[in-house]
Length: 390
Image 1 (cartoon, rainbow, N blue to C red):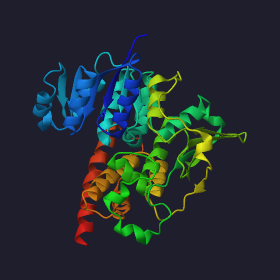
Image 2 (cartoon, one colour):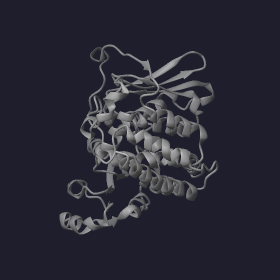
Image 3 (tube, helix red, strand yellow):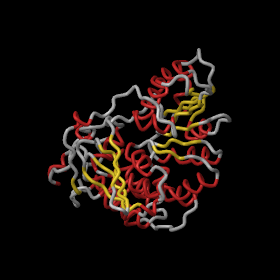
Image 4 (tube, rainbow, N blue to C red):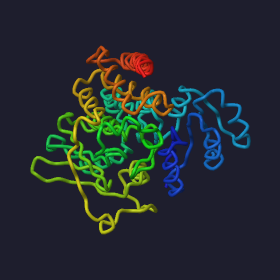
């Protein structure tokens, strides 16, 4: 059997490391030919020495000399900067691109890979949130597969099983609720980055963990699902499910509901995206229903976590509004992690940016990128204003 050649963008992050663990578990099926990371040069160097890719990229060009020194015994081409990710994604013989980077930097590599007909396994929410229509049209035009790695979207993909979405009444994404769900708003004013990063179920990177704590992660998933599955946003619902065992459900018009159950382990949806349409025996922990015990679901109480409502509103308005939402959130979360913005300042920054954004309904890719750029400027201004007011 011929090995599938894989490029992993964001290889040093939580998702990227799990991707490599899956690949290592199926050495006869996959070979890593490219690895991309941002600043974690030491971890990247270890991965390079283990997997011996032909090319590697580091986001910070100033770290290239250090990387060269660390992998001097490996014959690998080194790229740098945001363009380096696209260089990796478009190498001549890539079979699968896995994009697990954080933020808008994942958009260009995804589009360029799809244009070449490469299968893209996407954990990076931002390309579909920012430019979902453009991404999906590009995939269709070039007959390229776009498969989700997020556990929720992988679950929907499996529940749909290629069904016509006209037979779907509702897509239901589940949410653990993060570390603060159920707490009164006044308790959230003093939340620290350490508390926000302490997710009760999943092990994730800092940005996604904070998004989970604000419920913005679920809002971004709603926008992503709208484009991935061609379902109107008002047919996408979110339920709190603390056990994180049922990853999503699809309710059909005939009254049947199909759910996907698995352990809260990202390696399982990663394996499915890499091996699809095959299902291979997994070496990873699987869900035993008797061990899970009870399954509970509840509707989300609105008001305390406005980020989810902002995401729904942006999804309904479409155009460049989701790109502005995403950019404002990225800037606000980064400021919170640097202790430059309180936890409740995150939704406030987003609210201010969306209130000033001039939405373009049928945007070009350039329009999307300009919306992203302007929203970041507006977000920085909003953060400065909030800091001055104390």
